[in-house]
Length: 205
Image 1 (cartoon, rainbow, N blue to C red):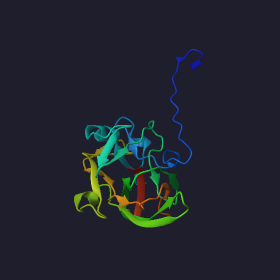
Image 2: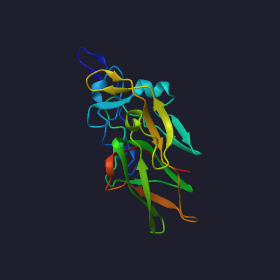
Image 3: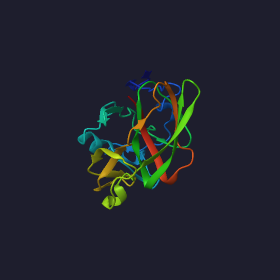
Image 4: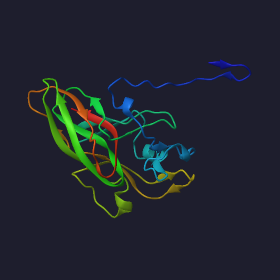
């Protein structure tokens, strides 16, 4: 695209497939260190540092494998939503015998009920929860059987300064899917107990 007197500008547009988790993203939780004010993961002013995550091996579009399930970290532009706060959103999924979520909670632990729908019209529910993204400032241990998927050395603030506190991304303990059935979709918890329940990826395998 060319603007008079400004030369050529390249715009990258990310298009989400209908029914995908990407299409449901409604929270900006990751900021680069040179633009900290672009994200507010916890609604208090803090966000994941993209730089610290990168140093920890978490890269846009990269893979994070936990319990044999390979999650894909979202690819988004600065200031774009990169995760969803659970509120009954339905996400289409395909195949596999196990299911897990990648994410964390803010402002305390968060838990709720996940609904799994199969191609034959049947559904089942499963409890699911995330630990606080800083583990209470380092005073807690992972809850709900969470696995630590990644740990970054610090987090960013909308004030423009970083905070030297270890910040985590968790994977839920895998949920065993019904034998002999084809999974069709997952509905995230509508009612959440505790803090806010943030999801970066929903993975089957």
